[in-house]
Length: 206
Image 1 (cartoon, rainbow, N blue to C red):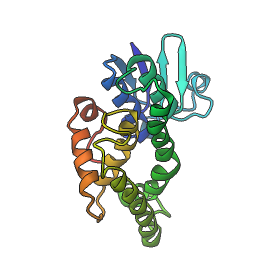
Image 2: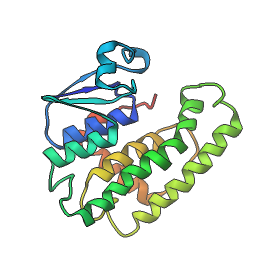
Image 3: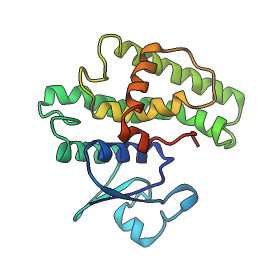
Image 4: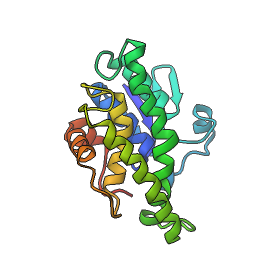
């Protein structure tokens, strides 16, 4: 059985929990991080010297970094479903994992911290409005990508939808005004209907 360390309110933990569910793997999740603490213990630092979440243990293997864990679960336990064996097909999904970490997640974070978590100085209206504008530009990219395909990498649900779907879940459920994106909304509703997604994506956003 897999062991996942991390609080479920973390978007990076959500990716891993969702992937494990889609792959049909039983797991134990242990709350650490945020209000649960536990990241500074010698035991946790031995697993992840960065003192971040999530961490995955699978037998003797211990992994940190959410996208690396997502790729591992997909390749080991969901080949042909979440994972494409053909590198030319797989990279169409892989790029969205990197985009999520490098573009969408940093754009949305100040909105979460300012509007939902009320963390100074992110409560400054200009900080929030600037972050919303950045996030909207990225959501426009998603809207365009979904114009001619049901999922981000093509015709089949895969790991790209998990990674970016966690971001869409956060964005579409935060208490801010958004530009209507019907293709993104359709795609998100299709994702959120999946049992593994519902188990991984709690509401409300906190």
